Length: 192
Image (cartoon, rainbow, N blue to C red):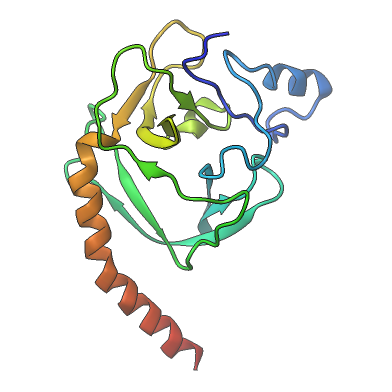
């Protein structure tokens, strides 16, 4: 098994309801299942017509964890969907995420990644469902899953390099401070 990347997979899936399908789905290509809490920075984004939320604190797609409503999404202003360039966004939750033994932030990497370094890739094992997932080196996020062909097809996956977007990330977080204060004020006003 290649140590360069390991995939975090959940044990349940709506897609495969039979035992045979579940066994096939749980077969990890070049990775292992992770226990809850081993990657506390992992987030599952869930969208339905009536909501968009982030679920943290679980490695299971269908159970556990705590959900937070998304307040705002800021996509990179130069994102190009045709060539998938500048594929990065920041999502802001309505409430502050509570940290625990299974929920924590990850430090962002601001240094180059060298050829041959050991990296950890975590995700849900659904290929398109892994987009936006973290690529990590020694506890620091170096990349964001952008796109790729399905697993084990002999083609490389593509990641957005965090280091290249540090100024944009810092600027976006700084600019949100005022928006966040306005949001909190509106929320308090609407409760009375």
